[in-house]
Image (cartoon, rainbow, N blue to C red; front, side, top):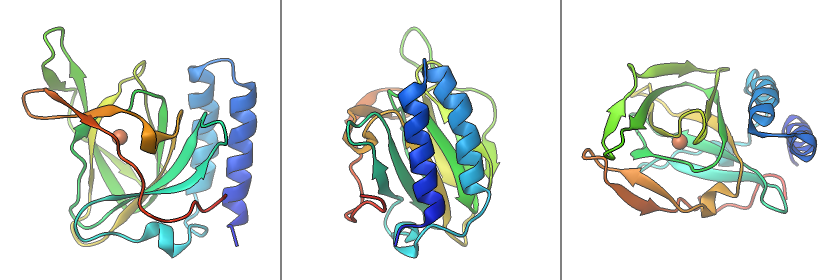
Length: 188
Ligand code: FE2
């Protein structure tokens, strides 16, 4: 059975995207919806919060039928981290369990990558945003080295199918399509 809180969130997000005039409206109203969803860690079935020993996992929870947005759970095992990467679409990140360290980057005109400030710690209940407009390049790490952390992300596309990039230390992009962990969506 789908957790009612999650089904209500997906329906509310659908309504928001149906009526939103622009990305800024989605990010601000969507952040409020996501903050409500991650305020209580009582709804995500354990199958969608299972870490993998080898690398962080991304489970599809819901995909809007025309792929205007998707909702995923990200699960970091102890000490796991993403490479530096971009998204190419708007995204919201809400921490459900544990804590994450987010390092943001910007590209200069010659393509070099520069960290913008120190890493930011996002605790359970907190929400962050990304997009080409507000800052799209970051790396994310589990703040804990002794337990998993879980966050809920909403993106303005079927994010597992989006062609985007990871970046090496020299700032060189490498094509990246994330896919999803092999599990049916929580909400069909
Ligand atoms: Fe990201």
